[in-house]
Image 1 (cartoon, rainbow, N blue to C red):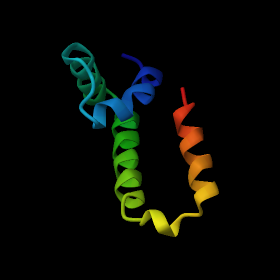
Image 2 (tube, rainbow, N blue to C red; image 1 turned 30 degrees about the horizontal axis):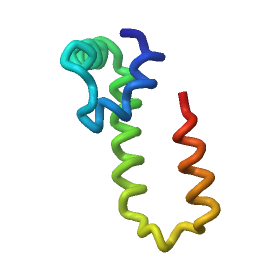
Image 3 (tube, rainbow, N blue to C red; image 1 turned 30 degrees about the vertical axis):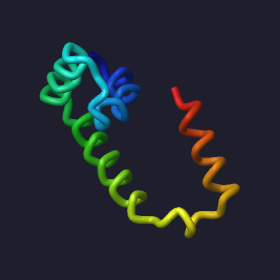
Length: 74
């Protein structure tokens, strides 16, 4: 697995949605790549932080724009 593929799969990895082979390749890449390890930790911190914001505190239009952006992320 290369860094680009890891970035594409990080959400599925955190959700536990990878098949066993892909999960193993993901973990092996993390062992060899400090940059991707740092990326994963930053991603986890972002998810944790954003998870503390109540939905009512985010403007509905802005929230929908964010969701659209991430839905189409590839």
